Amino acid sequence: MDFSGKTAVVTGGSRGIGRAVCLELARGGANVVLCYAGNEATAQETVSACEALGAKALAVRCNVADADEVKALMDTAVQTFGRIDILVNNAGITRDGLLMMMKEGDFDAVLETNLKGTFLCMKAVSRIMMKQRYGRIVNLSSVVGLHGNAGQVNYAASKAGVIGMTKSLAKELASRGVTVNAVAPGFIETDMTAAMPEAAKTATLAAIPMQRLGQAEDVARAIAFLAGSEAGYITGQVLAVDGGMSM
Ligand code: NAP
Image (cartoon, rainbow, N blue to C red; front, side):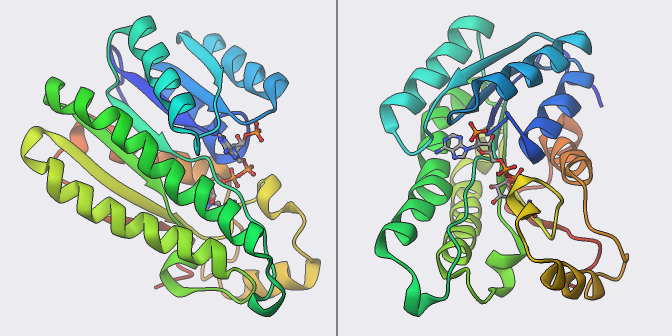
């Protein structure tokens, strides 16, 4: 895919799906600005890997749940590269537990990062993209946001909320050349899923028609498609990337 001349902001680009997205966009020639919460060393590894592909890249520490930090992130991207064409809202966390045991703080933390973080980042780039009359926003939802999952009331609420925000902003920005879509990954092998018990992994695998767990690159390729200029007539959609699990 050709992203030359385009600038992308990818939240949570230090690991997992976010890193794979950075590399996919860098491979197409995009300038990449990635943010991370705390893992500076791994964020710099992503930067080096993007540069090895011939792209310009920059890592910025930014808590997506903090409006001032998000503004500083987007300001840095514009000051460095002059524009923001692509925003991938990928930063996310889990704090799993059955509802009866779930602490209020664990509910709030997941909503703050996954839902409010996506809101703040979309808000910060919307004016920029509207003025450009061009933009691509891709949000990370989850099959859990579509179907729910025991032990993930907080996470499911955040990811279902992301879908509602995606469709609403898609309607607000459609006439300005800005598309807003979501991907809903199934079970992807990253740090986020690494701690899942083997029995739960085996049960999940049995529910996947393609009979394999997903890789970060599977999701990154779908995001790159939605982030490309060729996807300009697609907006407000949720693309499941789950090996057929949710059909
Ligand atoms: P991951 O490996 O745990 O990586 C999470 C990334 O988000 C890291 O780069 C982390 O930065 C960053 N991050 C966390 N909190 C942040 C904050 N407050 N501000 C800025 N950055 C923050 O996760 P993943 O599995 O790649 O998941 C990526 C996205 O896909 C998430 O939104 C997740 O919900 C969604 N998803 C994943 C799966 C799956 O099976 N893995 C399935 C469906 C949806 P640090 O490295 O600095 O901590």
